[in-house]
Amino acid sequence: MIEFCGLQLAHPIVNGSGTFDAIAARRAFGEALLEDFPFSAFVSKTITVEARAGNPPPRLWEAPAGMINSIGLPNRGLAGYLEHDLPQLAQLPVPLVTNVMGATEDEVARLVEAVDARSEVAAIELNVSCPNLKTGLDIGADAGSLASLVRTVRPLARKPLIVKLTPNTADVAAIAAAAESEGADAVSLVNTLRATALDPADGGPWLGGGTGGLSGPAIRAVALAQVAAVARAVAIPVVGMGGVACGRHANDLISVGARLVAVGTENFRDPGAGKRIASELKSLQIAQRPATTSNRSEARPEVDVNWRDSR
Amino acid sequence: MRTLAPLGRRLLTVTGADDVGAYRVLHVADPDGPSPAAGQFYMLAAARGWGAGEDERPYLPRAFSFLRAVDGALSFMLEDVGPGTRRLAQLRGGDGLWLTGPLGVGFRAPHDGRRPLLAGGGVGIPPLAGWADALAAAGLHASAVLGFRDAHHAAGARLLEHADVSVATDDGAVGHHGLVTELLAAELARDPYAVVYACGPPRMLEAVRALCAEHDVPAQLALEAAMACGFGACYGCVVPIRDGGYLRICVDGPVLDAARLEAVPA
Figure 1 (cartoon, rainbow over the protein chains, first blue to last red):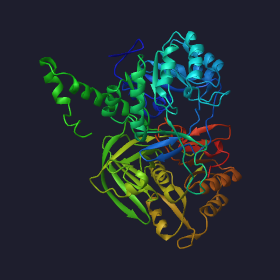
Figure 2 (cartoon, helix red, strand yellow; figure 1 turned 180 degrees about the horizontal axis):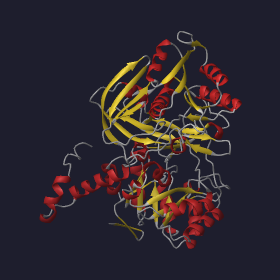
Figure 3 (cartoon, rainbow over the protein chains, first blue to last red; figure 1 turned 120 degrees about the vertical axis):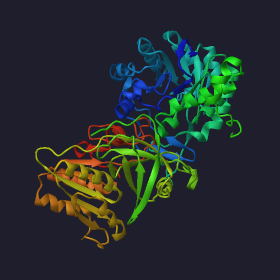
């Protein structure tokens, strides 16, 4: 078991917000999803006050070792989430983290209050990759805006508050420190890296939303550096993510200070990725544990002793 | 209509591949997989060399309707048009293939005694072939109209068994010289009491949709889109619907009632 903001989780692997739709996955995989759930906690996609249809297609671009998405946060809105999605997500066998985003502090406050009141929700994650309507800057890219937001909503939540950090900023460690100083219980990073692609036919923007976010192995090394910088800067737990595709990648993030690791784009390639990565990570952690007479015999058979050499 | 998929991708072995005109047919052993419903699809990725093509692609798996599923043997039809299909077309017997599925919702049986009428073009053959098999097994005989670029591509028509097939080609080398929708219009003029099942390029599907709407004939369209996941996670494969908003082709489709669409997006 691993402790995270007072939650006891079976292993350190969760999903990144918006990279696994448990309700849709249950339609595709049936009750096997509940019996063999890939994550130790489930992070919802981003919920906004009003329902959103999302961006016009095309929404995807395959990049070298990754992808750019411009989905536009489609969701049923707060009322639809509480009424329709939450009862279904409450059936999952793991704690539920609800991710919310608002265009103003008032909106975020409204979301946090409403979600905090629901017993099905174990923790709240703030998506702060949203432009501040006054400054035009992403709230999460500006330490002052972020501090103000966390100061406003922190007293409204009795549940753990996780701030999801954007990598699209000059000093992510300073942003994380601002979140911590205003009472955030944890930070998670990285969100996608801002990116774009051109239509091969006419040279114009390919994505219906204009620009999008890059994810996948292409960003793994960037994510590792940012997670390391944040983990050095704060004492609260860090959820690390970015291009994690196997146990070794998860182990790297934990090595630089992440408490939990989120799997994102790899879920798209393999809906069972979370479970596989958790299992690979466990084998690595057993291998790294100082050998004692009591664990040596049980640990050895599971271990790929060559993993360090293959890096 | 929907067979549930095992959770997680599985590593299968390619048992062989052959060329049928312009198309490549890949045979895969899936002895422990469930039997898919016609119109469902799978996400495929080569076990090796995925990511080794142009622009370091492919990265994401590729969505394919199955062509045939018999006793744990699956086949897929593809045309080499990009880094993903190129790598898949290179696979030989003994090679590994990652596969997730079956996914999505397939075709629904004809209702009210309407006759099944299949309309397809190019790489749109596979879901229709699987559906013709299923209809035949249920004692229903289907007519099919298929459109192709040229004779080389039209050779793919033989993959659709268990249906009376008429072919149209753009260059007139085989069958009707012209559009497949001209053959469809003739069929509907002959006997409009039908359900149309269609799969093919977007412009063809839109023409089928418009024709069926004009004749007040119900149609089920098997749509295609670039997908990252195939199981509703990425929200990348959406199609706008008449009532507003979008549907995800992977979990709400790929087979959708034509009446739900204002138009098939280009």
